[in-house]
Length: 231
Image (cartoon, rainbow, N blue to C red; front, top):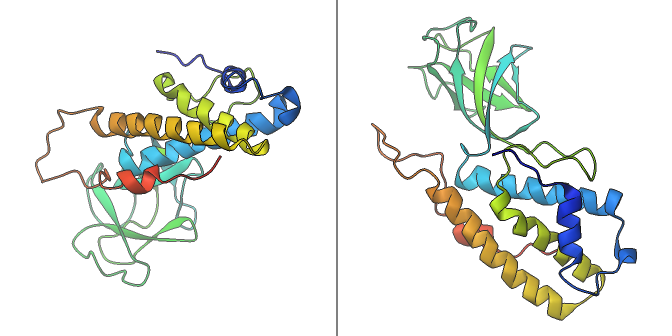
């Protein structure tokens, strides 16, 4: 279903959480728009830790003294060869593993690269790729809305708009030093964040794997993720 929510919608709802949220507290088109953008980025960063395949993209990256890390990637969790990859050995679609920069011989049996300076570079062994393109699988950052009336990122789940609303309401209450409102809103944030993380953990429950558990999903970070971060 297409996303229809705009930053203006979130700001309107956040202001209506308290009659004390007067217009003079913050400007919508600059200050609060940027707050919506930062809050959405934060929620996508949470998803990258819990379920990195949910807000995801696949990027084909050309060699340029290595393979640059996509700027839209929050987390890169798999690299593959494709038909244009040169050097080394391996079929299109075969995994290219990432090894430490100070142990580039860690995976001699398969193609490998190491990450350095936001670029993936050939590890320099016989089976490692040396040019062409690699396909990167990434947990992505959201596309920022251009203005108050532009829609939020196309993959955003509008069932969790309340998380964005609460985050803005916390910001407004913090500017006004309203401790009672802050306490109430922190409780609301915790409740909604529990629901959001739970959804990310169980959104596809019938996954079958040949080789044990899915290692890219971090299901043991619930408490750290729920630690208050301030408004």
